[in-house]
Length: 386
Image (cartoon, rainbow, N blue to C red):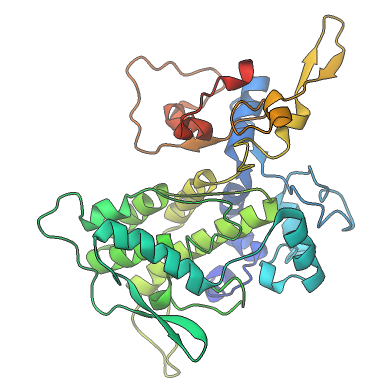
């Protein structure tokens, strides 16, 4: 598991992640970080071709004035849009132009939360789960500054409660709604200041799972297996395509960083970590695939692909198309929208004995695990038939 000299590992702690570095490491990883599984399923069904796929789309006009094609609101984000001479097109909000930050806040209420607030709210979740306070850190406020002090030693789990083991904690489902760059899930940096956060001070919901895994595994095999479990049970959705890319990248780099942190201890004379062991490339590709399912593009109010209610048509006998009006949009309801309902993945769902795979589905992708997100909230995936 020795390293290959990829720029990705040299820049693994950078706040502004380079898509060019990801592409150099593995084009397949970048492809996974851009795919939209819901729209891919729709495309395959319509064309009866299981080899087809679709990517997330920009869903913002912030890039529409760039030279070249592929940056309009409804354009899919393709590798060539964000690599090569187009590298650094996408960057964290804190590094964006101030006027653009203000415009996005007005347009989509995009206001990112300081890490200390994310930490305080995430602590409430763990206080309830563990039944005690200050499990991962203790919050502090001094001289007008909010901060936290990580707890020392291993996280303790109740010895007499089989439902409160470290593996149960890793497999607890966690979801960040309208996740932006996913600061509640992973805290590689403070999204309001751009200040990097060391691994031992991170406070995200997934960061906490990885801390528990780091403390309770010894071999790379066990670590890789439990890390996959952690990622399978961590979710988030967002409207704007560039934020989706940033969130997915942040989760991917968090995975690599934690592996390096766990399995490399030697440092040079300047105190810098000497990286000799990195996660196997197949495992990184696999995690990217899980991330691409679990961090998805969605209108959180309607639980459909953004703007998809505006692109539904009926065709008469003569081939004339008429735009359908969405009754739920007209009523202002949450359920019953005619847009494309977002699919998520229940990674633990076993194949039903009577399951029949359609021609357009890839049986190897476990299609029985793919469920409409709306059903998780008591809705019906057939509501758009009214």
